[in-house]
Length: 183
Image (cartoon, rainbow, N blue to C red; front, top):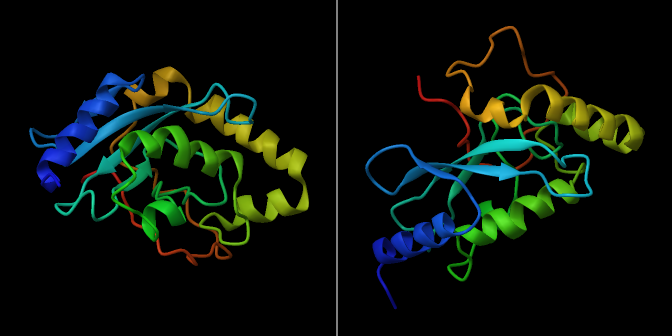
């Protein structure tokens, strides 16, 4: 069995050699951004998100922390912080998974099959359950407004302070906050 640092290097190289654009944050291999495209034949098609990935020292035995940098409208993603409520990543991670799995399986599945019964964005969950067509239209509006290819290169460091979480939003998920910009 290889050491966690060798596995981290191997998984990161595998991700870089795939079709994903990877930008390292520091000199180490613990933090980086990955450009992620919305799945085809979904309301997220055409959207491009910058995902912040943080690998813990114990990776792959401990899950990576992931978060959306630019906004996305989804029941299981906190609209303000970008943190993701994703059971496979946060609770049932296994060393059998690697970084490519996150971007080829886990995130596409999250976008294709949202779970409105365990939301981080209560408004998105309520709209999805009440009116699926309006929900999908809102998703597309967010894609056009926040997830164009040029948006991932020009994401502001500070989140707008005039946007507040609605009171009915639920933090029912054991999530890891990874999408917040460094102050």
